Amino acid sequence: MNEITRDYIQTYIQGLIKDEDEELEKFRENCIENHRPIIQKEVGQFIKVMLNIIKPKKILEVGTNVGFSSIFMCKALNKNVDILSIEINEDVCNEAIDNIKKFKCEKNIRIINDDAITALDYISEKFDIAFIDAAKSHYDEFLDKILKILNPNGIIICDNVLYKGLIANDELVTKRKRTIVRNMREFLEYVSTNERFETSIIPIGDGVALIKVK
Ligand SMILES: C[S@@+](CC[C@H](N)C(=O)[O-])C[C@H]1O[C@@H](n2cnc3c(N)ncnc32)[C@H](O)[C@@H]1O
Image 1 (cartoon, rainbow, N blue to C red):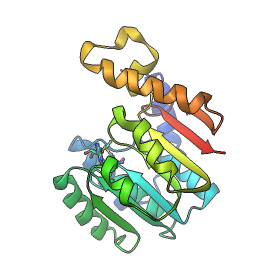
Image 2: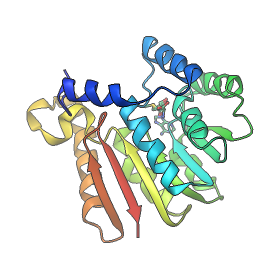
Image 3: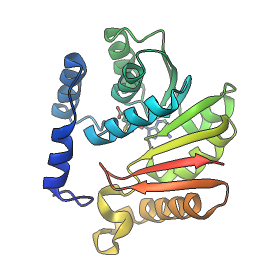
């Protein structure tokens, strides 16, 4: 049961998305079979459209996992992009490096194996877009640090901001999830009300926030 949109709507939207890259689709299917937490298809399509509008030269990603979204973004821009992705887990990081080589994206995608909270303090290059897809309790900290390395008029896209609907409905929140929910609600409140940002919360996938820094 999908708590963000009705299943039939999600199935319909996903059905409209053209699979242009057979190798990438096989990679997606393999990730799903192996329970890898990769971006959902309609979220990928949303990102692809945004990338084609903005045509960023440099993308920062927080949360690489096995590299699916990095490779997806690299291909969406026909490899005319430089992506830096941060991943805390060494094992998935190594898998991501292998996958990036398989897709011949090693000239475009670099991985940092570190906690993003630490890494974002020593990264000195600047980015046009940041994609946050990591520990949901820390989005506010990621954002603060990213703002220092984002070019003027930068865009931040965040995945999982509605977290299976919990963020919008107290009845779904168990004791164990209270901290994540409280932190994410504070984050969404902040990016929605602070005059520094123009924000849209989009109920696709697990919930996406599109944040334009003014
Ligand atoms: C949802 S997955 C990322 C999926 C990937 N973006 C994709 O769609 O292919 C989240 C990843 O963030 C990583 N992560 C969690 N907390 C992190 C942190 N503080 N710093 C860096 N990576 C983190 C996890 O290990 C996990 O691999």
